[in-house]
Image (cartoon, rainbow, N blue to C red; front, side, top):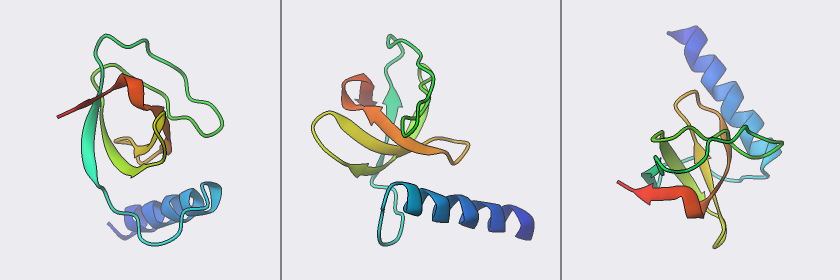
Length: 86
């Protein structure tokens, strides 16, 4: 619907501003949170983790963190150590 589309666009703009992300947002791949990992609450720029959740990878930022998006279109950093390839 139009309302949902506008909401998604607003969330994407907020993400680009918060993370200083330039260019279009494209999904590089999808990865799964390790089912054995501890669930964590999100922080300022960290994404909350749920075991077995599938996340869209937006950017591989460094050796320790990945910038991801969850199914609720929330963005944040996730430790690379808890991610498994699909």
